[in-house]
Length: 123
Image (tube, rainbow, N blue to C red):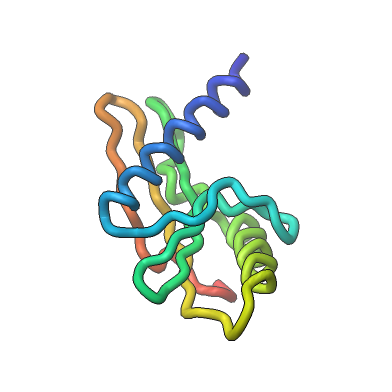
């Protein structure tokens, strides 16, 4: 039952993150893409830049903030998935970056924080 709640919170956080990004002018082109041993929560264009987005949501009483959950191991999987995504594109790779969208679900209303360029490859 706890797992179902976590999945529900994850979907809610991703929906809120997607809405916030579209509202900020991003063109979301992918969601929950499993590639290269990792998953890309959202893939979006901001102008000429391709943005790989990790969404982290937390409910009340979480021991850490959502952005703190994007540890070194998670970043490595994101980079691998992003490389696999880029390999599928035609032509030279576009400028890219990794963003984190942190969603605090409780207390309502939810609070969405977009952390641009949250980490770089190799960090």
